[in-house]
Image (cartoon, rainbow, N blue to C red; front, side):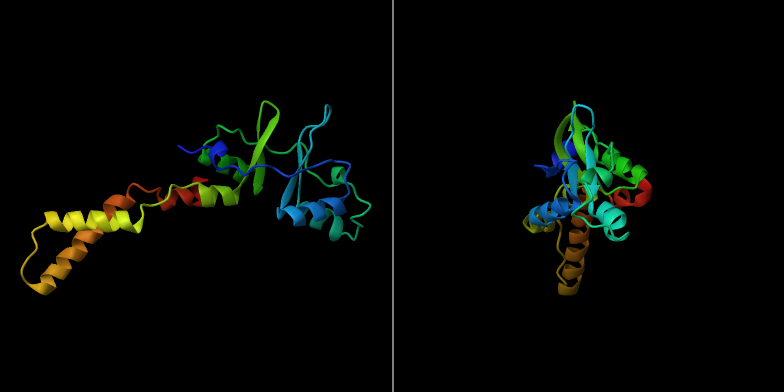
Length: 183
């Protein structure tokens, strides 16, 4: 079973709470990320600043990003995900908090960050390749008794191919595990 550790993104882009929001914007652009983890200090836990925080708390009210500090707009302490959390648990944590990403932290050490995108893109084992599917269909066809009539032969091949596909698809994660009610 996959865990947050298996799908998390690393390394994490980190910023100091004393940096300006303009510095945060430039760092986000340079690193092509949508959030930054705010460094932990002896007295302050990890925080997070997102594009949404900057837009809602700085840009929309007309504040100058050169004069606003990250500590003034960040979320702290931030919601954290355990590296041992299953994908379902990580997804539930994000859903319950109404957030899109959270740092993966273990024993006060920042290991990575997990996002909804990580869960969706990395959270499912790859389905068998087309080669594997074709091979299994061919084996099923060889084991089946093919009738003489060409139309019936095509129908039988289609039925066998569909049976193999259904058998293999039962091994893949179900779509119901991706629905919001399951999260």
